[in-house]
Image 1: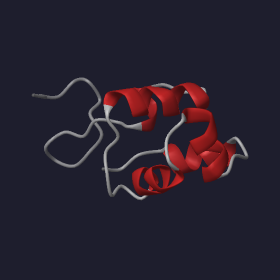
Image 2: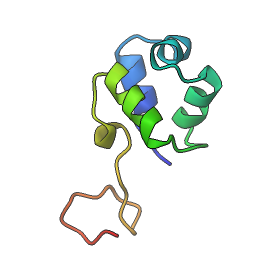
Image 3: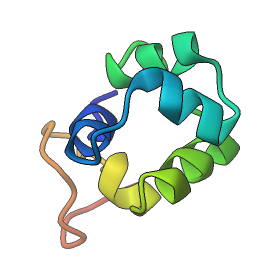
Image 4: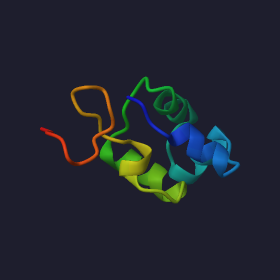
Length: 77
């Protein structure tokens, strides 16, 4: 799952450990989320978005069937 957590975290000058402490999510989980190895549950995605002063849909954009970001105009399920 592609996401923008790494970019936003770096933009804010925050380490993975700081993000982990502020969200209450393990640093290893933050790392796995950033690398796209796991998708966070709704609670974790919300916590990450709050700490990074962003929105869940910005950090974790939905993709359409063609692998492109969903612009809201295409078909979705």
